[in-house]
Length: 91
Image (cartoon, rainbow, N blue to C red; front, side):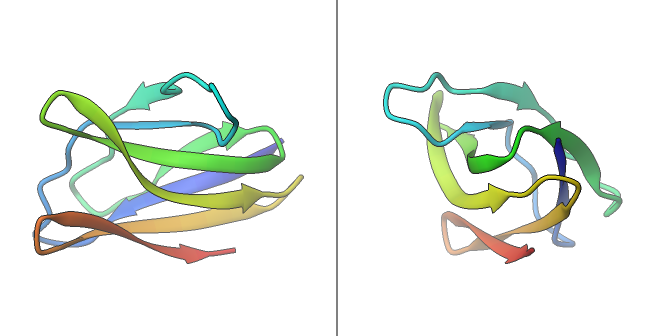
């Protein structure tokens, strides 16, 4: 298993999030709420491609995809650019 640390940029109102495998016909994944105080939300994920989604107008919209490696931590920082959610990924 690998770990994903989700952080939120200051001043960003966090929508509902979901994380799951980046596969064709994959469901929306596991829903969670990121911490708004700046501390990371750490999730364990199996190795492979992963998709991070956010809720917009009642639907889950992809924010980014990245690879999770065994025994490694991927840090994803979410920030708002206009009306879109952008990810800064550090593997």
